[in-house]
Image (tube, rainbow, N blue to C red; front, side):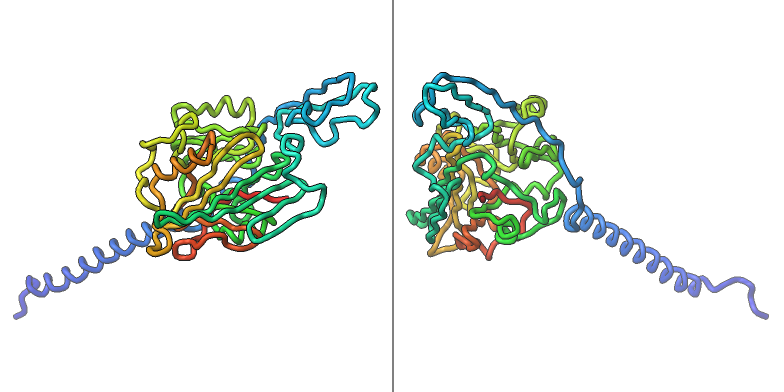
Length: 349
């Protein structure tokens, strides 16, 4: 007669494999969920929004004088159509705006219409760029000295032309897309959800990350710590550009020895310097390449901008991202041939 009681050994052998499959399935599902989360938040392109908030542009002020001013009397903010060519005895109307217009300020820096191009120089009626290579103390770096006729020639661009997370391109691709004469890596805004983003007069993001570099409509530049920066004031007065990578490299024009950054050791670097409205520089330091260039510490980079005579300087996205392009060609020798990033600073016609 067969017993109605089930064999306990047989029951255990059936149950354990089933339980193992359930646990394994749970692990696979959790892992798949984590992969999807990582792709969505860190890899796959995702548009934030197609356009930003247009910030205020300072108004134009019109004044009248009784004689035609000489070049030395003309302020740096006079537009190209501001001075009447009637005899000096007639009244002359001058439009003065706080928007950056510097043709009269640097008259010898520009041509009358022709474009002059060499391997390291570009000069037109609106732009003057000279690139210098320096090799010293096992470091190779490049300085692009820039004069501009007006603010419109100092621009920024997003990869693919869209403000988005995860959308990337090379510096060269973005430079070509925007017909840039000169371009350098930006602040890689797309890798994080924080950090003020103002591009070409539009505010795309206003929450803060760390140190901020602000470019005003008059062409001046200022750096701020996170605590100092007032986004409401910027929204009221307007701004042309703002970046959030950092850190700031000069304190009231003086070199610094401590920085709001943990990446202060030798590295490839890209950075921007400000002399006065209309006069800027971009610096690219190659690194991580023995027998060519070992890079710069943050303190060395700060001292470099001080020695150049800049009033303001700011560190941009460096490391493998550090790339400078001039007239469609690499200027530097990027570490591992550079990488795809989210944005650039560019100069162009």
